Image (cartoon, rainbow, N blue to C red; front, side, top):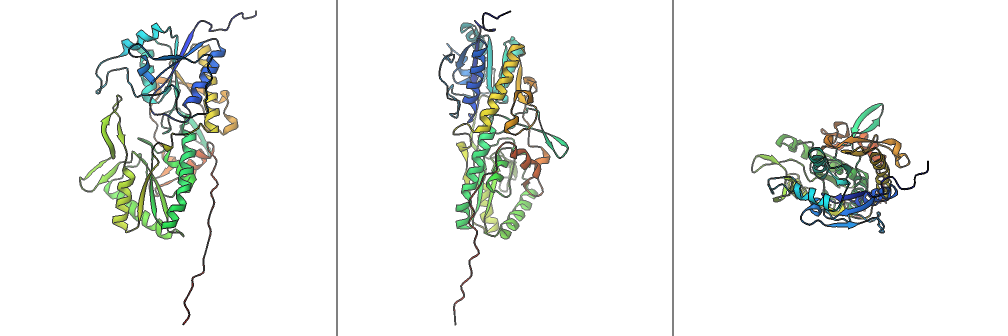
Length: 412
């Protein structure tokens, strides 16, 4: 029998994005919006994450509006607002959220975010019965998606989140550009990369010809620091051009010789509504200690927001569309409280719905870098990690200045 109306005609789906921005959020919003519209949903956008559902609400209509998914960041804006009670804000704002969901007649909510944003959505589903679907997002790539990486007959639990592929490409390119200035001054450059709890993104610097690396998963105790400096000296002295680029995650736990404590470096003591402080500055401390201990000139460089800025790259674009295809499946089956993910690490042509699955949002947490991906004794990413990354971004091609100038010896 012919269907006279679209299946979800008269229903409204709303999308919000929370937490740190990535180059792939607009692509995610556009992909979900397009598919939901085809099913008959009216599609709303909630501005500034959960903040847009507080007070009188801050909602826009996306249904028949042009939307540029290639443009990075999120046109719906973002915030780190937590509707549930926290140390920073002990008041529960869930009643405001529920009131606005009813006022705007929102039937389904899609939350684009990481563990915090999607964790709040999951709690609303569990405690209030709000139909929610989570959509993964983070450049840190540490949101547990249970994506399997098949490597030499072994199954490694990896992670693949929209935003990471674009950021990884940017970090690789950024690192590659630093080579020329490092070579010009025979310097060591300590490159600080975003990564609060995991070194996934830091590893992408090796595609820009980085050498050694430090990640949050490996605590830099007094003994390990001493060993690290020995490795740095040997690696630098054996390098033909007497230069070294060392990417370090912002969340590296570093032993402070003055205080005798092992801790991260804080850019600010202020915390957000999920209890997260702002990290930053570890690269400067490490570069200074290299200079003082090894008497080798070292400089710090912070990638900062560069990694999460700019347009959505090709792999991310297709990844968001593939996961949005899975959202359609969840909507059709009214299977809420779930998040679409890739079942396995695949190359660009294999980004198809049949390689996706959905996991319970209650199982979403943080996934550190697997031990198979980093050699803590050599401070280097392994061939397994290189294989993982090569599925996602191409090995950049950099110009090499190869030379072996003859030494001039004065006559007489």
